[in-house]
Image 1 (cartoon, rainbow, N blue to C red):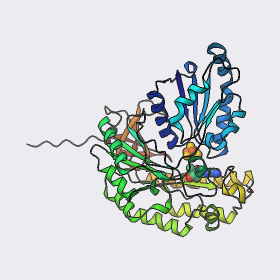
Image 2: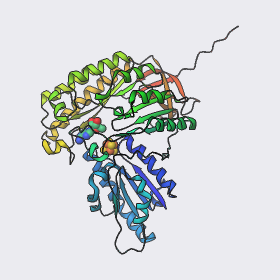
Image 3: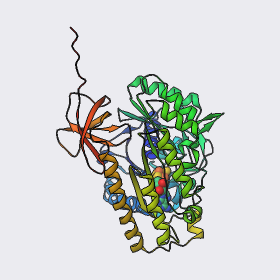
Image 4: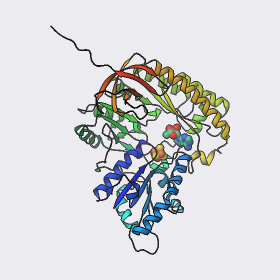
Length: 448
Ligand code: 5AD
Ligand code: SF4
């Protein structure tokens, strides 16, 4: 049978989809990139905000005609919902008429069996299957993910989240924290380096909470950086509570651990931070950011911010704005608060900030961040940065694109170099999100 898989949401889902492909390929399924040829359509879904749900319901609606056609022609068609929305909604997903399979993020080993059950032909009643039980142990150990990208490899080192930020659905869709052993991770990274991957990105819902048999995240990232052939190491997504000095030192000292830290602020107001259960104050956050900039001077700092959390006042909003201006993030993902069923906030605090107030505040934060991003990028004009080439630029024909050590997109006129190579690019111009430059060949020294 042919399986077509679509991935929504964060990098964890991208990484999980690589596990799903491996599980299915090992069981003899073939993977199709053309939906019309598929007997099985799987959507790996996200639950983080309401618009993630809306996107999936819209997509499911578009599958109605295909389902009808396939049912008539082949007598079977499977539409399976995987990932966080599947875990959160469970049986309720069967209310959508095209869905006949629901599988949560810890249950992918069971996929081949579940698919074969729902695709049995000749049954009177449409078959439905669900497996959405969270596990305390599942890390997909022993499954070799089927990767496509040839430059960067996502390596999941821990799963789950125990923080219970009050706005967040992740502890419910991904379950409790669990870490893989250092040996397992190193074994995978050595194989990736041998396959030619130049960059490894360590992944986890709370990646820097990683701990396994006395091994801390600082120990892990150092060991990964020491694997021969690994040119760049990144990590995402961390929590500000887990940045001990040893981790900052590891980043500062190892040239191949990238100088980019994503430091999700969420809010700059102490009152809102407390209601969010973020476990730090504005002052503690700013001190941490300053310490990071002191220890890693050329660091790129990025963040996540939520506007319009319940009870947020104009004064709370101004605290967020001043924190952004004080830290000067290189870039920020800014979201309107979206109430998620089952979270602590949804039970304790009504979603009482009006839609138009959320819109006004988000626009204000976007504008402020644009100015800061532009200023941070302008400070790089004239520098020559090592850039890892990822491929051709989608936006500008005749240009290649890659990433700086700080993870900023860099575009430059096409060179004879290939994806995976790191080359020096002199930065000549910038926008809020992109650095522009040209390849600076090494000077040739002629000795007489
Ligand atoms: N509403 C809006 N944004 C949210 N995020 C997480 N939960 C919500 C929510 N309920 C944002 C946070 C997080 C990022 C991945 O998504 O900023 O860091
Ligand atoms: Fe979305 Fe979070 Fe699930 Fe990733 S882990 S897919 S961001 S809900």
